[in-house]
Image 1 (cartoon, rainbow, N blue to C red):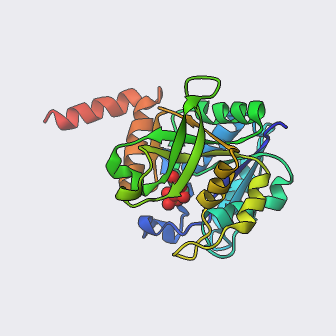
Image 2 (cartoon, rainbow, N blue to C red):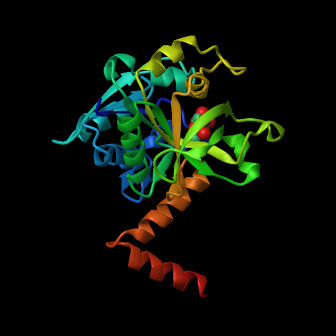
Image 3 (cartoon, protein in one colour):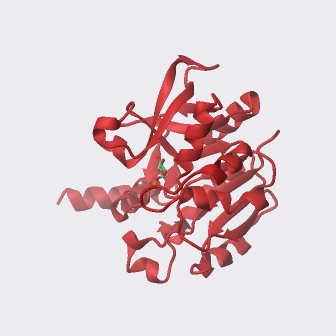
Length: 269
Ligand code: G1P
């Protein structure tokens, strides 16, 4: 079945960005002149999605205002609400009715990708295999405990980058890490994931982890991954956002050259 819906969890309170997030949700903070949320909506459309469902909170009415202006002739953008902050797994399950009984993409808006290639690869892998597929990346050992960590099978599937995922652990202690491969914020999930989410028990902090539903899929040999070297900006912290603004602005044809010469002038003093 074709993958036509993208779910963007955007209900978090953005406390790392206070005081900016007193009035502006972090997903709407600008990367030069474009909110992070718009980059993710554009990526979904480029990957062939015609529907975007943003999971937000009633405490963030500007997300709904933005969504109502963000639909185009290619993509319809709507919102659903997550009324309690019960974690990523709960946020995804709040989109169940809007998604329906079909596969869907999950895109975490704290991560901006250099292009839509990873999401396109994951969609293609799902459409070929019928199995949920997640974006993966190799990181330095010290970074593993900030992510969902996966153990993959030695055999590659199809092309050089697709692998079967055998085991998934959310943010392991360094001693418990199963590899140097982690989940990055792009997933293409089968509708069966919603049933698995119903069975997930709250983790120590009371949240329902999406990773625990993925672990159930992995135990049934129903989870694949693509190990990617895509350019990725982590905009989940103020420093990450600042780097993304500078790097993305430097890439732009309209302002890149001007920014580049200003930076050179500044640092050559
Ligand atoms: C979430 C997921 C984690 C994943 C990460 C990617 O964590 O729970 O498995 O590796 O996104 O950014 P968060 O960063 O929201 O704590």
